[in-house]
Length: 100
Image (cartoon, rainbow, N blue to C red; front, side):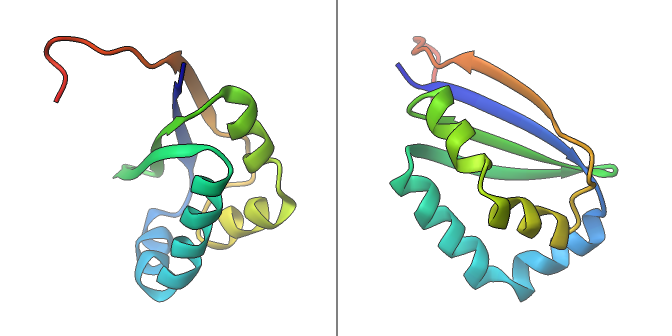
């Protein structure tokens, strides 16, 4: 059973947008590590003063272990993430007839 994880990170969204281009290789490397660690799907969204992360992971434990990496935490701060912890929602992923 996989889990959906939605994180809302407050921070500098202008800096984050710039980093998506300027540090694209680092984002790609993190994506590879994420997939090797149990990440199944990943996407960002940008709102007013926050970045939304929408992920699917094999388990909560896989996600927590991945996010505990101090290098990843430093990267999040370097690309505009505020030092405060994000809001996180975790839910069991289910299939439905209207899914696309």
